[in-house]
Image 1 (cartoon, helix red, strand yellow):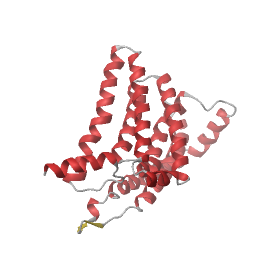
Image 2 (cartoon, one colour):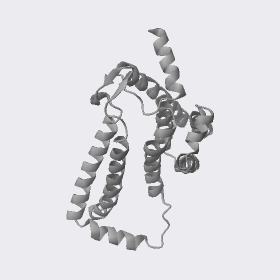
Image 3 (tube, rainbow, N blue to C red):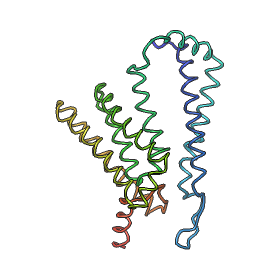
Image 4 (tube, one colour):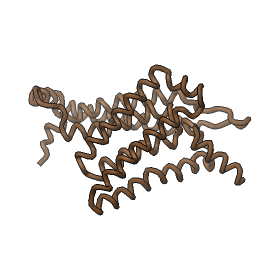
Length: 251
């Protein structure tokens, strides 16, 4: 039986985290053009790349406020203080916290780091490959190993983006950061393949599903939005440029 009183303290924390995430998503989305001119054609607000992040950010903020208010009304502060007292001196590296990190870290990395640095296909594929594999395989050791691998690339990417090295490298060669994205994607793919290779048939079947979802879904969805709905992608690099070449050569 879940202790509902303890959940109120957790609601207070999770509500606060997602409130901040929602605010930052909206702040970043407002930097995107709500309308612009592309090839002499005026693009309207309803096809803006900022529209979806704005909706997601607004929904996160509204839901987070609802959670926080409910927690405050039902003893969330007292339960939060009690939880802190109980956890004092205990290790924060628990299975529960690692699972939470496996949700929050890739989401924040996608929105605040990869979205600006990589081709949009790479950004989405990296996120899907990590997130689907660590939870679909249901193996804690694999989650820990994958999280360490992801954390390494996260630190490297933060350094590149925060210091401006990513822009400098792209000036030297326009696809430099996309190459970095390919390296990250390959490392995650190898991690998934090697784990499944040493496992049973059930995991191998799950591996096929993970790889198909991660690589094919963006390959189908991105052209639909980019060429059918005329929605510009947040970052159009090597892969989307190749898609454009194929699309316009077939027209």
